[in-house]
Image 1 (cartoon, rainbow, N blue to C red):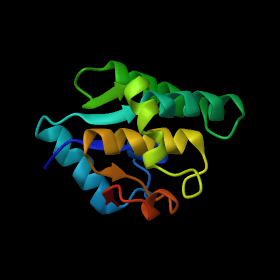
Image 2: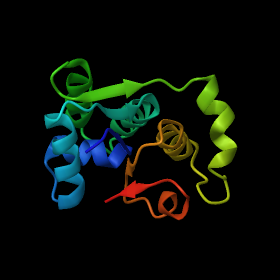
Image 3: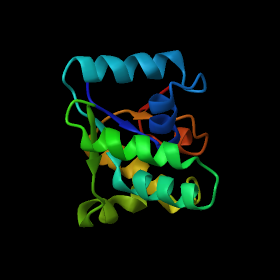
Length: 133
């Protein structure tokens, strides 16, 4: 097992124990955490959840659960900032394949770390980034 990067929907579904998260993805996340590997969440995912909660597209409880998990050292979830190195890598995730900027940032985070991305996003799965689902 290894560390993973979670897409926004993946972290929310994991925290909600949603059946929408595949069994393979859920087991990989649990295994990584149980074996002491960090499971990364891009800061842009946190911003996206704030935005979606403000718009009423996600429950405020989803945002609260995410923030609590990120701040708890025993959750295994680690927030990663968006920085200059990631910004310079954005062309490696072409806009014509992944048009949404937050999704590109999440994808390039996995690419930069050379880790699998846990996502069902059909646009991201068309890239060369290793996908776990």
